[in-house]
Length: 74
Image (spheres, rainbow, N blue to C red):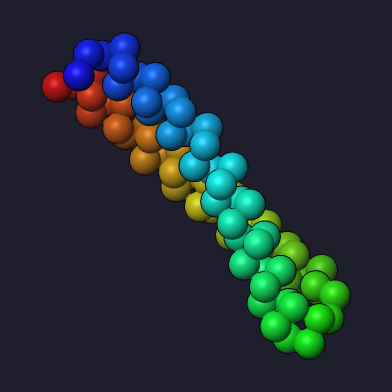
């Protein structure tokens, strides 16, 4: 696997994973709320999910950066 292919793959991972994680967290929250008798999501719940999504995104970005550095070192 060439370096360019590795870098493109890593870039795709860095873009796609955070977006999918945020979408997934909102989807899961929606299911939880609907299963709870269809109440509107409380602002606290929304904020919690939003911060959770941001945390997951940051973790993924840091992991991706570590991956890029690891690829460059090898």
